[in-house]
Length: 389
Ligand SMILES: Cc1cc2nc3c(=O)[nH]c(=O)nc-3n(C[C@H](O)[C@H](O)[C@H](O)COP(=O)(O)OP(=O)(O)OC[C@H]3O[C@@H](n4cnc5c(N)ncnc54)[C@H](O)[C@@H]3O)c2cc1C
Image (tube, rainbow, N blue to C red; front, side):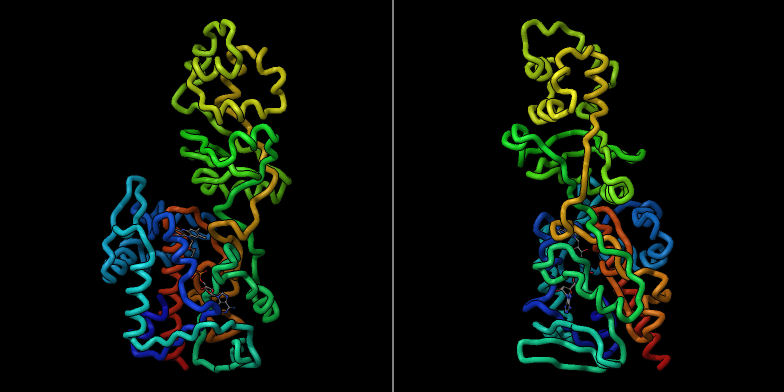
């Protein structure tokens, strides 16, 4: 995004990329439908950046969601708003957009130096490692947009942390964001339910409630509501070593309504069959109830207590999934190491944008919007820096 703005102003731009092609994570983001941005009003949109909203607010206002949609449409990819308010290109894919984008950049004179891995500085020179050895360059300005540390095989692995720390840049530890969480399933539960969705539940934590579907994974849980609550859950685990996610397994029933249903005579039905027939609880949800530490006594629970467990099921999460499986990365270059144009205050002429900055946001289009908007801000910062020089 920065290369596009700068090259359109006649500035000579070269993109260095360690992989044999650019935009691999962007392409991966398009695999399940490229969620470019979100259509909600700008204020609630900005609040999605939580305690970084103060920094990102002005940057997002400088390149708001509509500007990102216009940009996408300018590249020949019409956008639409999905039922959840999320914005996608009509094709859902990232590949046509990336192809058109690269063509535009090449047309504007941007050079791509692929298979060039940035390895830090030698004085004022940038060092790149290539198959043919090292090369060094001294640009008038540098933008670092090296991504976070999730899905490292796509190119972003966070190895820049060591390089920047040596330059005294303040970095918040990289951590998984929009990630799954570890749960100790019993063998019985894993064998039966791994890979299955726990549908129409409400997950809540610290007063934040998200409705949706959770996927049962071999070592825990994944899915929309889990990702949306991931920053709060991760912080709790960092502090306390575990977090208790509350699940409402029957959100369409009130506690009273559910209790009444559970007061029906069980006849000779097993508890599992009774739960299926009386309240239409899914097999996965029943399986989950059977995972509770008190499972041996569940059959003797009075209706009130059983209903309470179904409406407030505490799922013990004991860690995050590893960062290499996360959708995004929290932590990164701290904003107090940067000026308002995203230039390192102790390394003039070096700018930072995208996921390597210390911000975090839920899925829903906020990640790409944040990356693109910081790219735009850095491009404008580079232009004023070059004029000042
Ligand atoms: C499965 C998945 C689905 C996603 N879906 C969405 C979505 O629908 N909507 C959304 O908003 N976000 C989504 N995201 C997140 C989004 O893709 C990222 O936030 C975004 O791509 C980050 O952009 P970036 O430019 O900061 O970093 P990246 O896209 O990671 O790009 C950084 C580039 O720098 C290169 N690089 C790194 N280190 C070096 C080095 N030392 N030398 C040279 N090159 C280097 C990397 O190879 C990479 O190409 C998804 C992510 C994943 C993993």
